[in-house]
Length: 82
Image 1 (spheres, rainbow, N blue to C red):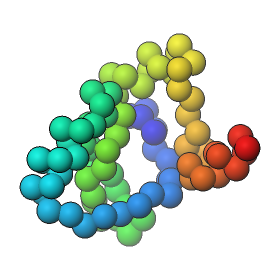
Image 2: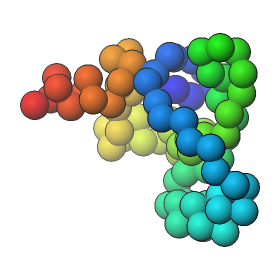
Image 3: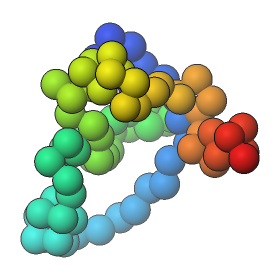
Image 4: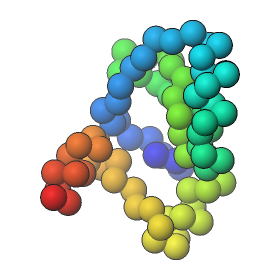
């Protein structure tokens, strides 16, 4: 969810070397995405791939994306849409 709020969503957590992140994952991401810091359920922090804040509002206004964070899970969205 973007800066104006927060939402709890299901995710996947991976432990990988920063070298892999730097050399392989970040260069392969589309320009709309960036690395951000998120808070995990236990209060700790983790790096995550997030949509750039500057991209969110224009995409929401245009209808090119919609906020599904209220569902809390991408799989739940697929279930509702399917």
